[in-house]
Amino acid sequence: MKLTIIGSTGSFPGPGSPASCYLLTAHDGTRPWRILMDLGSGSLGVLQRYMDLKDIDAIFISHLHPDHCMDLCGLHVAVHWDPAGWGRDRILVWGPAATGDRMADAYGLPRDPGMHEDFDFRAFTPRETVKVGPFKVTPYPVRHPVDEAYALRVEATEKLYGETATSVLTYSGDTDSCDGLVEAAHEADLFLCEAAFQEGRDDAIDGVHLTGKRAGEAARAADVERLLLTHIPVWTDEATVLEEARGEYDGELAVAVSGVTYGVRTGNRLEAPKTSSMSRIPVSLAEALRKAGGQRDQVLGG
Ligand SMILES: [Zn+2]
Ligand SMILES: [Zn+2]
Image 1: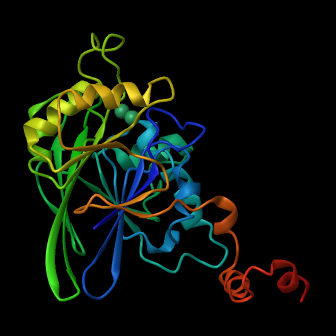
Image 2: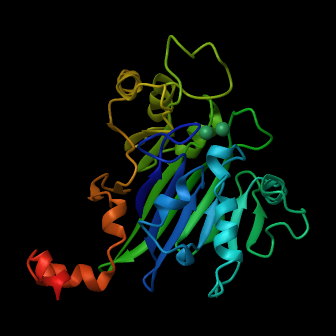
Image 3: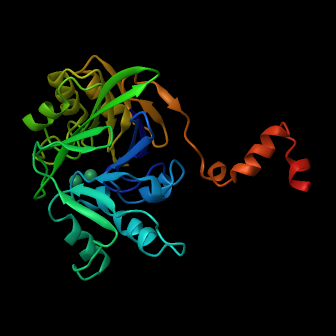
């Protein structure tokens, strides 16, 4: 399983990254499958550097704060109003029970049909596993001030190069310290965990977010292989929360960076971020440029 960080800035988009959105890719032996965890503000644009929207197999929404779900409104337009026709099934959207109504309200649509013609909304049952292709996704209730908030444990079994391997990623969603989070992350290969708060500044606030220290405590309690801190807002210092987590957890540790792809089992960075300008070069032209050995003027002139 591969993890591509589409958006990792906490609470609202930052200058260097959209709000929460994570792309997971796994191969079932026949084709690659792609699921998204959250589709927060600003993420729909950057997502298109990494995949065709028509290849989304399912979307999992951790909770209904705008920085985790609001770009479903944009995706609704992309599906509903595609001049060439969408040409695919409705997109499977798993999340809190109110997701369909909340998105219709946000857009100003009547709730019936709302976005139901474009999205197949399904409600999570806590701790009940959902299967999509090679992925098994289990939602664990966590502690955040909304009706339903979940951490997501994702297991992917892939047959690659004749070997069958299972990798496990846990995404915290938004949460303060709780048993559900530790249970969700138990011995995960990669723990993608929020660290929105700083000790000394925010730690008196209970039941909303983790500090770097609390994220580190959860990673240690869950005995994870590696910890990737995310959902860091623009007003929180990355080095500070990294240092706090390091004080509690002595495994591999880093801060998630928008555009980077990680191997979930190895923790390696697999691919460099794609810039917006490169992603717009048509494949045929990019190929011609490569063959011309960089003689760009000659190719463009011809
Ligand atoms: Zn958030
Ligand atoms: Zn939230």
